[in-house]
Length: 287
Figure 1 (spheres, helix red, strand yellow):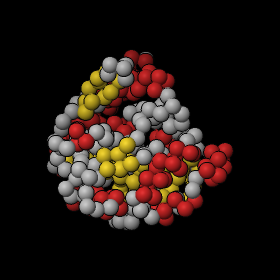
Figure 2: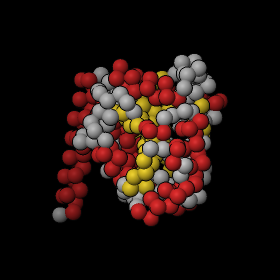
Figure 3: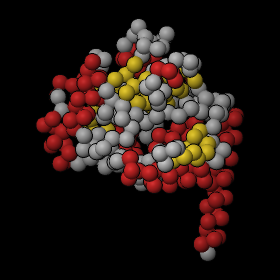
Figure 4: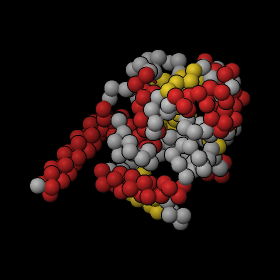
């Protein structure tokens, strides 16, 4: 694990003002060096708009990538070298809270990020995340850091880059972008046997905004459920479908302890075997 100097990558779509007023402003308030910050947009039209609106003092470079969240993240990872420390941040993060953490409350966001990557090195993990819910009530009783299978929310997480590793590339969520963070969490856990989550750290964002991003909440209900069904079909041993009162489908991860290397290899073999078996079964039915 090399290349300790991290970058902050912000994928954004049709939300130039939001990106400028929230995420870039939040990073600026936390004194994250603007040279670390890169904003990625979908096309030339978006680029021209963002260039006019974004405060040039608060980011390093604006880059045209790909349309689609999964495609954009993949584009970003392919741009940076093996081992690069990459922090992914949504474009509408309006605050980051370190105050509940005994370990980080008297330190900067920059310090937290560097320590998070250091913990990845110590625990042989290639991904870290924070608690998905901002409400302090839920964060207070949690352990400072966990290594088990816990949801790594896509709005704020870090990876040690492995752009050529096919086993962690997203497939189920690639079309719609729905549940991409769940699929990523599972794939990293299968590959490494560990995902790090800092449960005392919280952030404020709107997961289902009215414009840009992945679209309106109502329009996402069916794609979300479709993604959940595909996840359950491929990874039944890692979670189950749960439907909320508002109709939103969730794929709830099972509480699986972090794994030793022999356990990890065994689970990877089982997953590959199940995938091959399902593929053969489908092929026979089609015939």
